[in-house]
Image 1 (cartoon, rainbow, N blue to C red):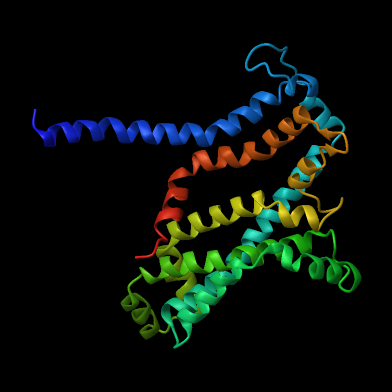
Image 2: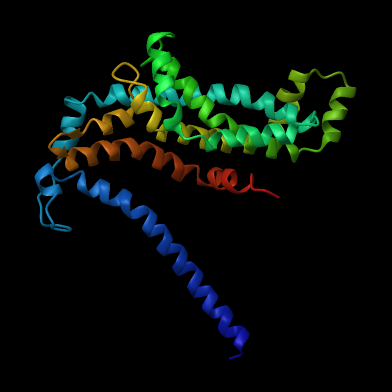
Length: 278
């Protein structure tokens, strides 16, 4: 066997094994959380690994009966859906303008928008809390959470949509203008149908980001607009963490998004790779 054939055989074995190993490493925390959710708080902190305990649904029963899980889940759905919709409502026209009517400072604006993601969230926590509580009166409201989540995700959404729109030939847009199509008509009838795959993957990634956001949803809510992140954070007391209950709530929080990601994995991969720097 030649050296080239040996190298090829090694690659066919090594890379799949490496990929499966990385996948299992990423999946193990989710598995462990789900596994621990069937233990009591006392069993969850014991060193026994697998089957040295009696499985119980006590944590899930308490979660739905005593923790009002469905109210927190409803708030997560409301804020994630409306934040995603509002972000796309603003991001689509902005990306369209930058892609098909660029100016001298378009690239500078894109870089500036992306640079806002580098701002530490803790730096604006106090003024954000002070203003929303004492002046605007919107603390712990769905409106505040939706606006904050939209602003957090808007730079990434515009960047992704800008990349997708740049792939559309400008000749198609120019042909539409010659036929008298309005700007809204260009977006609705030409751009969005041609970039539908990119729009769907962008919306999916934005929704997942909104659903998983914990820093702002925990600190800008108390009861009325509290999401699942707030419910998870609530399983903490001065005496420590209630690992059994915490695992059950975490499993119920990540479960829907894991299922959504599984069924939409092709769109997720497209969204994560197609928007790369070319």
